[in-house]
Image (tube, rainbow, N blue to C red):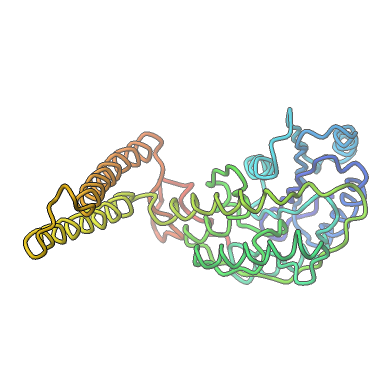
Length: 333
């Protein structure tokens, strides 16, 4: 399947879990599509602990086709871990992720590549005509997408669509946990990525069962809190904790003023006035928030310095050899 490259190499990452009936037709469709790109290509299958024969089928494909790369997990870790493993082992300068259930259409890959070649760093698929159940899939997804777009400031109609194209320089530096794979565009945006969204084809599932359940929606919303904090306050947590602390202290002082006012104007003694308890509560909580902010600042500085983690991301350098290569986007654009 490898072709003489016309540009950056291409890696297609496909997480699979118990998709024995879908793997072969998906592989054949992806291969047919990649041949038209004229790039050096590879397909990275990440098996997430399948128990239905998927692993044996993938081994057979890898033995016959050297462009098929295979990662087999010891047990089921989830889609986020599977995508993270694929990103870590992909060798292409452009990475495309897609589901292994045949609902994503490989024919959309050239369209995603064309959008990348226009100068975008992340191209997110949008399942405009989504072929899923209305009440337990479409409606919760619509609400979640609205909330995520509002909180993150990155407006996308379909965060949950796995079919996305990335420049490798962005996803290679992201550490994913929980259900955070859907938030990759937010991480990339925080690094200065140029993001586009493209309507893609979405098909009915023909074989196997969906691994989605309603609890995932709540997990996603909880992960969103983490993403928002890391994106906005990861290098300055004192701003959040300190801000909350100052607000609580101000409320405590106001409650104290009200207590004194009521004492001298209405002769309400402190021991009979609940406002003094409210004042003490806010003052203590405010002090604790400020201390938490200071501790968080110390931890953040230790984290960045001990692991040599960057606090900035460079798009390009001119006439200068940058030492921190992982922070610099490839100039072969």
